[in-house]
Length: 78
Length: 269
Image 1 (cartoon, rainbow over the protein chains, first blue to last red):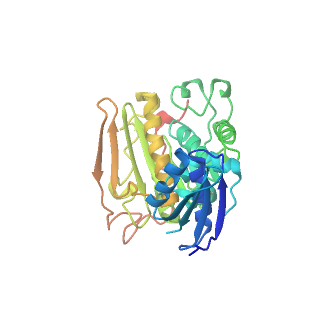
Image 2 (image 1 turned 135 degrees about the vertical axis):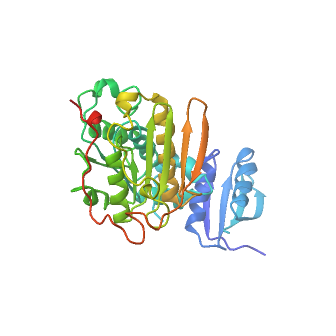
Image 3 (image 1 turned 90 degrees about the horizontal axis):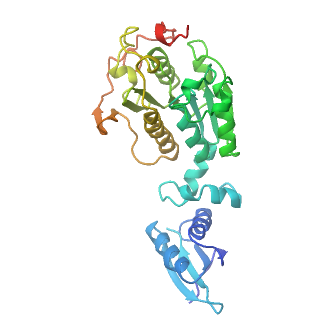
């Protein structure tokens, strides 16, 4: 089953905390229930951004490592 | 939603990261208008923090020029500003901190004849004045125009502040019916003031303005926060809105503004 994605944000090469700032801006543009795909670097970014998003009431649906070593994270707006 | 530039996202990132502020809160700040009454000890930190925070329009009113005796606590003014209008000195620093901010300067004395017209354009007012008649004038005008404001005062080692939501919370006059008689309370120029307490109190007032605009947390309403920097004791004294308050009560007796007598000591000879 594939999740419908409403917005995509590429945060390759974007460190903490600006990747979370971009995630919050993208999520603010969406309606509750819509899904953001954000591409995050390995390490601190993928360890921190999904947790912070959950703390703010959003749901992390999926985290998938991509071929280039970055991560695709699907976040449903809460 | 407004379009932030990449530079703005960086500039305001520490606000946007806060769950209680976020993108929406920063948008509210950029759309907000705050008036600072007095470009002195309290107005100095307030003006810098409001500009840094990206409050879209900051008005500042003061009729004085910068003097060397101001510089011990009025940190928005520099030695090279001596002799220039305080509002222009403060405005230059605010614009330098953040070009997103529109600064409006009013080089005049706030008085009964002009205060309502000036404050009407603003969402929130900061009382950073140094005398009781003007503090009561700010209170009464803000109650009449229903504009929320932060009261603040400092002397020696002491500071006090309260936030007023007119007709919803206790106003300054609910607790302090009228100004003390001239000479009953000395001004800073007579009694002295520890420079850093201007920052302690002014930053509380700035934080209240930011909280009000972003609808975050609980405001300092229905209480007076006071501190003594000698002991660093802070206390909150609960206050209540008074039904018989002469300005915000059920049957107000103050229906128009009049200028009260200024105390002798703060009129420069």
